[in-house]
Image (tube, rainbow, N blue to C red; front, side, top):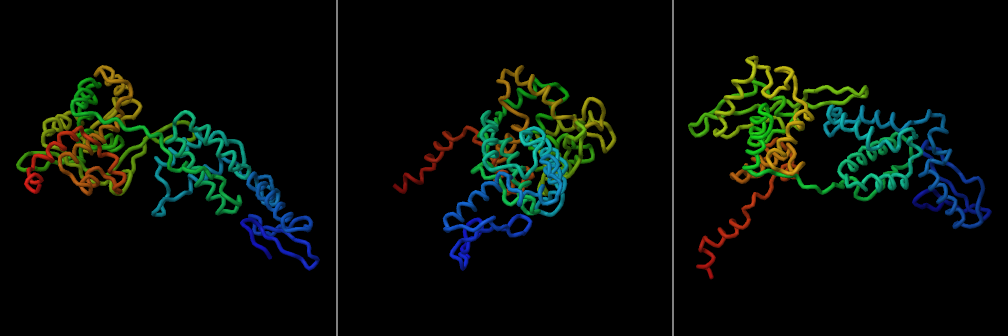
Length: 388
């Protein structure tokens, strides 16, 4: 028997050649007739392989094997529901919400189809169309979901091979740089934003909190310490809140653990912020469970990101900054860059920002415009001139 990348051929005693392959259900499929030459047999196998990749082969299509049709949306939703992460636990509600949005918006092209009908060529064409508007990052996230779901389908023997074969799609990004405000710009934003959020902007910039972390901070999470004899405050980050979308179209806030295990941490902020933090505490409700930055509807109602953005965008405009120059997440990048500027090494940055990987934390380290002065300082040591 001769082996090839797909299927098998063998020469019979009659000198003719038989071709066969193993279907996804484990059954060997023989060609309906024998061939005069091995080339003819291989040509038949090649045609069958193409038909299988297109979902056109009745022998390998699960719908013709007695199983009910496997609808695309239902299979992806099932994958989202039962998928586990590296430690074997189910996905976080916030991750499920993101995946369902990708399924609903980015992958709508495949709705109403069976997963067996998807082809590599069609997915490649979908990818090309999806990135035409420059939104590679969201398209890549959708592709990762699609590819992972199709890997599950292969593992469950619903399809014979994963049709997701687009080179580079898993790691594609739009390449847009995060806008990082200067110290002066942070002050301008805080000055021009709705007064309800001005202290939140400052604390976010000097505490490095994610939005879901700072909007879940409660009075009970704040404690004071002394730094070199000066009174300062530490915030215990143990939870984060996310707005989770449901199939009904309604959204609700879900309180969960932070983004990663490293996210559970104490965050100490500069003693320079002590008067402002004491103002925040004086303005918060007395109940230890009261949120420090609640929505306008009550002391235990979480602030929505879109509501905050309705104040953030006009603040940039009033401050004379271009629309979209900075996103609120730029404040976290400001925090990382300036802690590094103050002398923090990479492990210290990871600890303070609550990121588990070096690659992740390095995203928050940006140039602060000191390159020229640092280069000048290199030549002022004098040692190199003595050596010369």
